[in-house]
Image 1 (cartoon, rainbow, N blue to C red):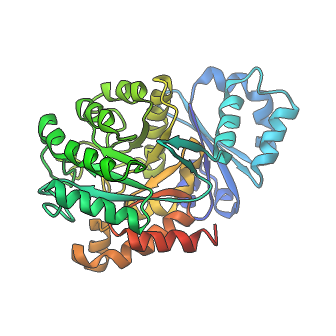
Image 2 (image 1 turned 45 degrees about the horizontal axis):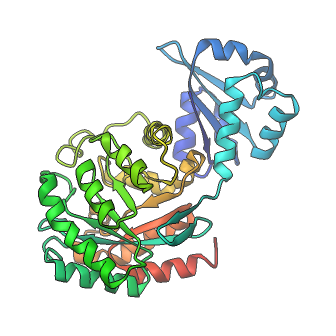
Length: 384
């Protein structure tokens, strides 16, 4: 059972919900929805007394599923009002459905703050993550920073331009890419991590890897964040590594592997499917004792061009997971395909979508062009 807070600012999605629940009232609702998916039959029966209150006022609709479970959606003008209703009537103490709904509402309003290294990241404002690919074949800058000297120089430049975090990757995860060995990845990234910290001990470094061996060596060398494109699914031992070192973890959604992810890009409903995946992975990370969690819906990782735009438009619908949202759109192919631009022509489009992402609740922007990103963040901080 998973509860999600949804918004009403995407008419196409409202049409989907109206069809799913066979009710056109949904189309005219202007505020919040609370959808609860995969509810067991016994929980529905336990909850009938208070659910009838919403049904009578045409604020709740059901969808019975072939597996015997039920989805439901509640229409509300105020999350505080829903929370107050459950609290006032003391439903929370005895009912798992109300606990799930109230949990989603609580997480929706949470503003996390993490101590990472010696830096405090308070996610009431956005931060900037600069991309450093120490690879010969990354899609945007493959080979440019393969030497440790060039990589370190670029990292320091990004820090001087305002990057709060440097994300270092030793394996390309572009669509269709082949993996490299853990030893090769370590050979590429460890000298870079050590030399950056030698020159800038205060640097907050992230290691972009899904391999526990690589993560362990990077954290030993002084990295503080593990950015795992598989959300601990490719190599589950990486969660234990993060716990051991007290590392922050970025958990990203991917469908398939980098080699295969664009071969099957079908979803029942893109945002709900990603939300369900990230909920299961954040629950797993919490069970492992990992306290500093960041989520990433995985733009371009097993998604169509249209899927990517849907995710960005509905980024706020991930807020009820209760963790800071990282977004990485920088120079990606969906921008190039939409505007017919080569990789080196995509920085303006990147900046526009990064700004929209921040407005829609992203709190870490992962980008190549740090100078542009810093200006975007400075402007958006005057608005959000």
